[in-house]
Length: 243
Image 1 (cartoon, rainbow, N blue to C red):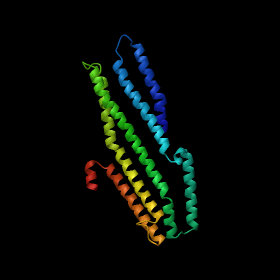
Image 2 (tube, rainbow, N blue to C red):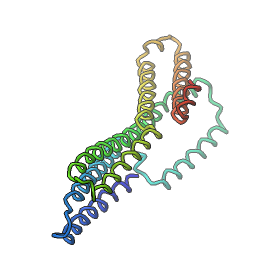
Image 3 (tube, rainbow, N blue to C red):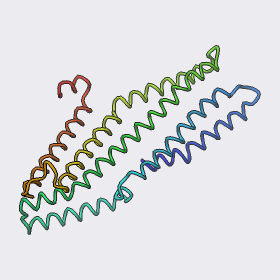
Image 4 (tube, helix red, strand yellow):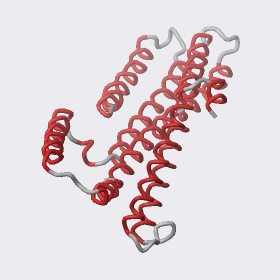
């Protein structure tokens, strides 16, 4: 995804700029390229700003493990799975130890949820800015062309882009998915902090009881998150039935 954004920014933007310059030079004195150049400028700005913002934010918010290659991650996963199987075959841990390990793994789960939330928010912001620029370009092109020919094609393209972007945002619901993931991550982190500080509802003298209650609450939050994801995947009528 990051490589695609870099490719679009480093290759797509210069090619678009060269195309506008070349088209203007070839049609100089024969055809008025001002409207096409204005439209191309809007597209160029949206492309550059979107790619830079996506690459920068993706690198800033992602966990360290996402910088590694897929092959390295698969190898680490296989080694960790083998080590887990061997350890499980020789050690039968008590319930308290399993609950403590569950608590110890909570920060990684919070990081994963926040990383996914950040990715969805970046997609939403990039599409939203593209939608704003395309919508702003429509009245500008309309004012430049009176009668509408030959700007009719540009207007059709802008209208189609607005429709496609609006449909994609409505179908995938990037904003809602990012909000739900962030909300779940914050709630899990709140429970983990309360457990560490031994405050309500984890202020019982028995630590095993606190860990058991913590595991129950975190699992309830994860189940609720999965239900919200299923509701977003359903059509509007299906969402009402699930609720």
